[in-house]
Image 1 (tube, protein in one colour):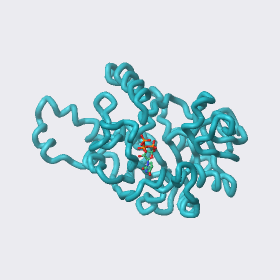
Image 2: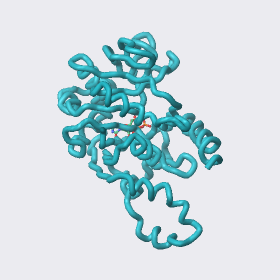
Image 3: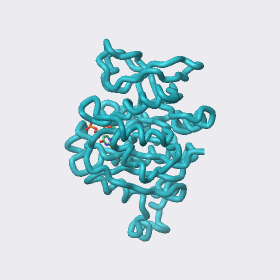
Image 4: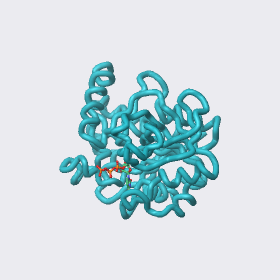
Length: 276
Ligand code: UTP
C-alpha cells in the first residue's frame, strides 16, 4: 500500500501571468476548488494519507489551505455557510501534510529529489496539480496506478495519446506492449521534435516512483532546457530495472495552459458542480 504522495508545486506558472504573480498557480480555482485540492483528493481516493508538498517562495497559500483556519471555523460554525467548508474539512481529516522548499527551480526531477526528505525510503505517488484528471464515477487515475503498482512493484508513469504536433510539450515513451494500455518502457525522450518522437504516447503529471529514483536523480545531469528532468532519470531506471507506462482511464485537462483551464472549468461546472 502506498501511503505518501508528493506534490511538486514550486514552479513559477509563467503561462498564467499576471494571475500567478502573487498567487500560486496551484491555487487557481476550477469553479470553487483550487487545483491543488483536486490533486490531494485524488491521492486520498487512492488510499494515500501523507501529503508532501515541494513548495517555493510565494507559495505559502498552499500550506495555509491545508491547515486549520481557526478564525474561519469559529465564524462559520452553526451558520448556513458551514457546508462550504465540508470538502476541505474532509480532506484535512483524511491526511497529514508536510512541506519542504525547493530553493531554485531546477526542474521537475530536482523538485522530486528535494522531496526525498519527506518521503524517505518507500514507494510514493507524484501528482502535478496542474494536470487535472477525472474519471466520472470510476477510479481516479492515481488509484488506478496504485492498483497496478501492487501487481508490478516498479515505477509507473501515466500516459495518453497526443497528436503528433503536440509531442514537443511532453515526455514521450516507447515500449513493449504487455497488454492493452500497458507498456514496459524501453525509451523516453523529453519534449522531442515530432520527427524525433519515439511514439505519440505522452507522459502526464501522474507517477508512482520507487525510492531508488532519488539516487538516480542525484546522478542525472541537467537535460532539456538546462533542467534536471525526471524523464532522464526514469529512462535510466527503465534500462537498469523496470518502468511501466499506463494508458489511464479518464480525461485529463492541462490546467497549466489557459485553454485547458477553461475546458476544465466548463467540465467541472457541467458535470460536477451542477450535479451536486
Ligand atoms: P511546469 O513547467 O508545467 O510548471 O512544471 P511551471 O514552471 O509552473 O509552468 P510555466 O511553464 O512557467 O507556466 C510541471 C510541474 O512541476 C513543478 C511545477 O510547479 C508544476 O507543477 N515544478 C517544475 C517544480 O515544482 N519545480 C521546478 O523546478 C519545475
